[in-house]
Image (cartoon, rainbow, N blue to C red; front, side, top):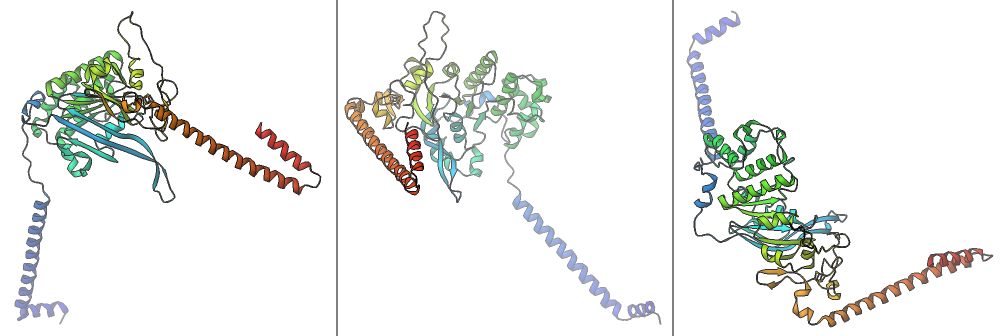
Length: 458
Ligand code: SF4
């Protein structure tokens, strides 16, 4: 009997029923397993899946401000004692031991629908301030409040909710646009990500935003390199406004453009502000532009606020010597007007090693002895006009003699210390030269040592 016949005979017998039963059970187990797995994976997917979001209705940009509830805190942004320090030196274990104080104790408030200008020389911390408000940099001290939420304490996930409300317009329109994306896709990207309008309306919505920013509809499919600087900045503005922000931080938005284009962009920003009720933090070193667009001004120097007040007050009567010097350089459109330009002497000190007392004292023409020792308090010199200068502190001004005496005493102590140090150093050198002389037999090296010493002293 062959093997085949043996199996056939086995099947032919009673074991056929047993085989079929076993196969049926195996099949049932496989099917049950598949069903359980399918149900389980379906449950997982349904758990992962986000709740379907209710698509917001598309609102024309001009209606955004009108759609806000009426009872709101008039202050939209509150910056309180904000600090941002960058480590510049670390110890053996990698712990930072020296910091650059880019933003040091800055406070101000901005009301809805107004603009605040942040001015100062390059390196004074203007841009760092803007980026820290946006939380592009972590906050090292103080708080930032936006619409009642403390942005400085929010986690990244919670912060996402506010990302559309605060937008940034960068200084350089050339490098802030992705070169491989068309204008339409650049503007539409954030609109899609944040579900600003239903998907089928995105195209029309983007065209509407482009129109508001003075961009032709045929630009939709073009690339950034095909545009001039002014048009690129319009694209940047359209991208920022497409997500319906409430606060826009403009970081030197016109400094990379030529003068005629600057005027167009500034007019566009002002027009959009009026139509949409936008709030601006306008960072610039161009005071003429700041005068035109802002309602209040913060003057910064080495990370500190030197002066803060309404734009017209600061332009009418700048109080701080630094502001006076800055504003004396603003050109006046009158050929007969006499310019009393105040030239600041010396370079701006390093923020890594700022001077003691008033940070501006190394360049101030009105510097007093007290300025070299004590940092000035931030005081309200006139109504809603704040300044950090001892000239406006009556307590200090009425007692200048005391501070002069203190400073002289400090100088005397310092001179004594230096003299002691020199004497110690001199004594050590003499000991060395005496020891050298004692070692020599003919006295020549000792003479050499004495000559060397004389030369060094000379
Ligand atoms: S505190 Fe003194 S050094 Fe500083 S700005 Fe005022 S006057 Fe000048």
